[in-house]
Length: 205
Image 1 (cartoon, rainbow, N blue to C red):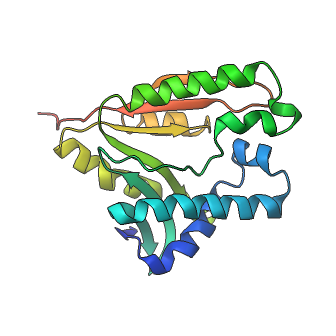
Image 2 (image 1 turned 120 degrees about the vertical axis):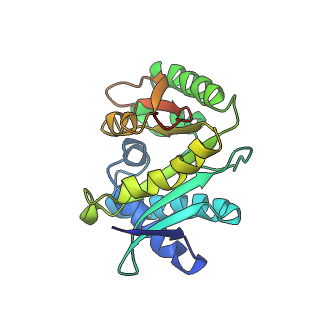
């Protein structure tokens, strides 16, 4: 089983590179940067920016196997809002080329903003992102990173929220108790965003 620990500053660069590998197929990233090398640099910068902003709150966790970083999760505790995102702001979508210069882009932005506002209406934990090294998936790394904070949220009776644009992730998060509160539908060339919330769960019995 991987060991979960607060990410040391010395591992931030490695964590950003891991993020870029894990999210290489992200639809938003591919809209912004079709070129693989350009996309890698873009993803590393975005991942590092998010990690750096969250580091002072000491809830950036790494998953280690034999002292090697295999996964990372960036959490923000209740009441903390960190500006900036690993994703480009969707208000910039019209500048991303033909794919986003279509009527659905404005509707997508508004639906997503509404969902994010609803998710943050009650202070709770926010999972900014969770990334696992693509070569080491299906080994329980993501589960360990998720459960590390979910158990605390349950103990504190605090909700948790997240956003994903990968449809594969939706049923995976549902297994942890998350439910979709907003679905901002894109289209053939635009991503769909799911905003999901998990209420604190009490032990059965």
